[in-house]
Length: 506
Image (cartoon, rainbow, N blue to C red; front, side, top):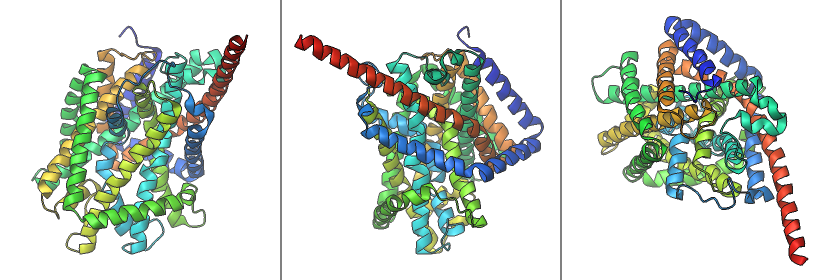
């Protein structure tokens, strides 16, 4: 514990206060976070849409610009992981539980309950459902992650700075980042990470409980969810004890194998032709309508605006809240890759896998809904996937695999997050003490439990949007700081090249 900084103690105090508040006065916590969430969604929805689209545009610019050749590390550095393991780590840390939780539920909801603009249950609603699912889980989400990861990896491995969010802002603010202002920025990043990961762990516990309720006599209750969180906490702490190269690496590869197995089973057992037709058709529609979706705010329609606040703005806030954790983790495992290679991989590969995932499980669920025998839209969100499986051969086996996958994703996300939180509160150490990781593991699980206790899934969403807002401003500063540093780096490289040519000619 000698390595910990004041950021650890300050953020720990804030997190403990939040946990105690939620345990003692859950209704009050839900009410206040709900009011904050409503204010941000209504008054700053335009801001979220603009900055997230701006992040994507910046990533695309970096891929095609001369800066793309710059390596995230020294010229002689080689990547620590091969492509297969690297993509597995990206995917497990970046999406994980969310893909399983929403894989069938979100397309069904948009199609049968509340389409973005079309009449529910129509072919137009079906196309819209898949387009907006791709929109929420595709390039925009990974653009947010990529920004934070790129900035941190550049400053850590290229410039030798500590792996801290505050350290990336030194080109803009100089030594001020080594004082109270820098500490404040790191505290915001750490707290956003805690809430972002706790929200996802809450979703995971709710869905494991939903699966058990659907398949067994076990009831859907907070007590069961608390037991699930407790069991998984013990498991991810065991994984955290083994370290990054063993625990997270093996779990990430296990996740990919299980996810691939589940995907292939559903693709083969489900309506294969319908899935592939929907995938092809809606990918084209997504690419065609991406610009208009990116800026869609519907100021003249209260109903459409409410939909955007509840879904698009929520997702942008979720990804922003997760970005310190995912960004730091992706940066940690991406040393030695060029900016062009890094951004192309982070933006495209996980997005395409996500599109195929949603088209497979979403289309299969919608086919069940169209059959009329089972109304999946009436199931609670966390049971939708299991309800879809129940209508296909080997449904029980797929449900069991899905629950195991949620569990391994749960462990990987929490394990990765304890590592990242440990880094951020030990001055960027790449080997944070085990006790620090254990402390954050307990806090994350406690926060997830308190949010579920204080208002279930709605409380999770409220807390998320509230925590993400301040960090979004830090992300803008990180982009400006990176661009300034890259310009100086490029100018220095060009000068070295000219000096070398002059020596050669002399």
